[in-house]
Amino acid sequence: MLLKDLPLDARPREKLLARGPGALSDAELLALLLRTGLPGKNALQMGQELISTFGGVAGLLHTGADALKKIKGLGPAKRAEIVAVLELARRALASQLQEKTIFRDPRAIRDYLQLQLGSRDHEIFAVLFLDSAHRLIVLEELFRGTLTQTSVYPREVVVRALALNAANVVLAHNHPSGTAQASRADEAITQTLKAALGLIDVRVLDHFIVTATQAVSMAELGLM
Image (cartoon, rainbow, N blue to C red):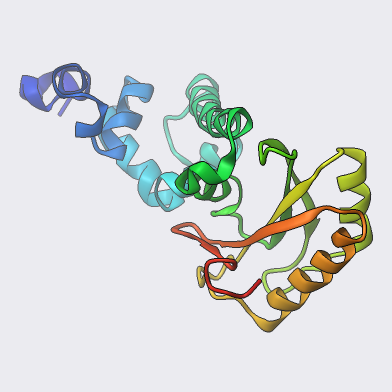
């Protein structure tokens, strides 16, 4: 069935204009981006295929143009549009964090970290460098590891903090396994970095463990 053959109130564009974007499913929003489908598969079905193939919107957020080639019917133009919209979502959250004190909106920092790290298939250790007002200077992915281990070198974090004139940092790393539980190694590296950064008067405010569905604060768990 073509989208134009659906009842008027079930068509994604008309539904959005009448009821707002919140009324649409993820697949319906993607259908609006795709606009057209293939013979035997309309844009809504293609949107649902994208959601299923890449593990929801969270998975799509870390999907590049090359990976999208596996979806039949996605030519270069459509792949570029999807990647561009996803990049805009990341930049919007980054801009939001740069414009205000991040801990006034804990949900924003969690959403931002999930966008950046949540769906990666390998472990990444990142640092949010903040100014004295707790505004974001930049997020940098400093270390990459295997699915089970990441090597973190405190000296490199200290060097970057000095170069960026940071006053505070927030640590973050992902657990590709999907389990947002702090390990003893996580607690150990947190304490090591607190000690190293403390020597240059840079505070470690928190350490988040990130999965595709949540970002857990070690500070809130009393592990700092």
